[in-house]
Length: 360
Image (cartoon, rainbow, N blue to C red; front, side, top):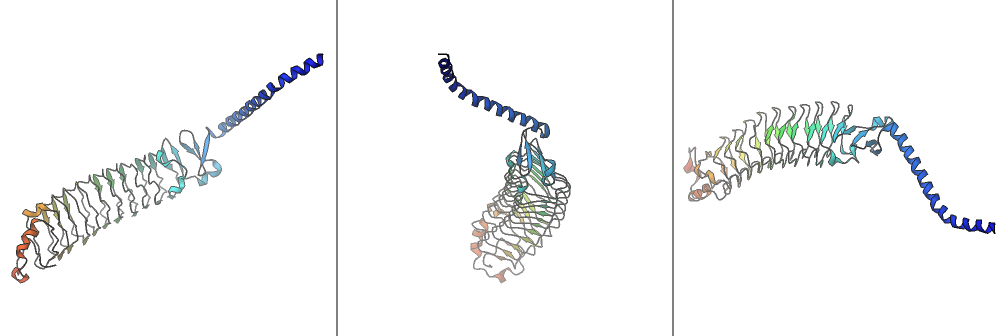
């Protein structure tokens, strides 16, 4: 009878033990894991995640393990990316895995020489970049689409890639390197808040679209060494009021100042021979244009959409060839219709006329 009672009690306890055992086992596993974490924390601090060979602590601070120190190029503290001393080249692959949208500030060491193409493109929170003297190359799209507010470029920079700061919508001020010879195409395109640009004396070339659609840019002072202004270089810079092109410039390409709606006055040097297509098209406020005595050609639509030139006589030399559409539908074109049957020899010795419609 007693044996039967023991059997009954055991059969009742067996299901309960099957529940308690896994719980006890789980608690034991949790205890072991907690102990491992505590031991790990004593060695490396808080819980860490490996990102491109770099351990990332909670609080967005990157710490390099000693065994991998030679592979680590940066640390991040409080949303500031700090490129480590000794690094000579830095690119987007160097922080692959890091959330680039969290970066607000970048500092570079004096050892750095090159910032690769696309490195900080689309860093949508990046507002401040501290360059150090020594950087000589900033690649294509290096900081495009970021929120940088100011660029003070070290004088060591010799190369600036295309679209390097394109569409930095909050960029307000740019001081270029004194060692820079050329501003690449679209380097500052659509920087709609840009108000101030300081050009170095060494600058000889402003390439295609370099400052196009910089709608807040009110004034530019070109250096005396400048030789070339590219296609649509300042197109749609609607706040520009005056343009004074220095005597060193030999080429201003088509559409260079197109749609500069508030441009009032333009002075061109005697070094220019051609006013190319659409150069000042739709500059609706343009009133005064000083043409060079060296001028030989005025191409199609150069002054189309410039109605305020109606009251201004343009000093066009006798040998200048003017395209029939150079002034579009302006008063000057309408006036010229009355002269369409007049031959060139009638104007022998004439120094100032409104328009020469039949020489093209």
